[in-house]
Image (cartoon, rainbow, N blue to C red; front, side, top):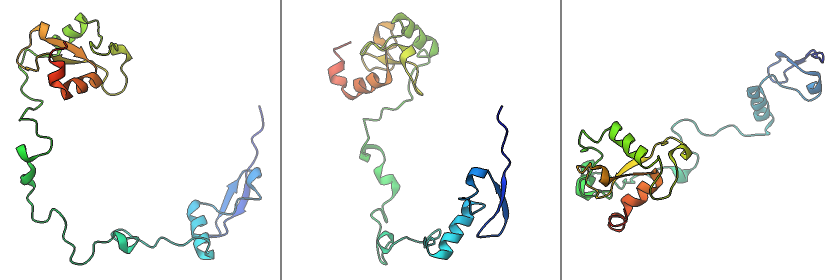
Length: 173
């Protein structure tokens, strides 16, 4: 087993504090910390100190000009709710599934289809990341129709594609 080399004592050029380094750094080490390096370089004019502090702007281009009026000044937040919102899709939401659409039913559907996405064929064990389970899709897009013939497992990617093109996929499954 190799012997551990003893450290060499040095004196910091900035603060004068004594510090230790391994022998291979004896000729190059000059400071005890990074903050001493920065202080030394600022003092010698090698780098410039930060010109900004919290709340100050780096340049005049990033500041708001005097008299500038923000685009949303005076517009109530409620003005973009409901049908006026750009993501409105007729009032549907994640809520509203009947109680029988539970974990047991979902697991049963996955098992019937051998834990395989019916659109792309990927198996549940191959899924990675946060969403590792196949989602259960209603073929007729009716959340209340939980007949086993109306439910199929899809991976998240396929479910997103199917939800985007409802009219096309209504006749596919």
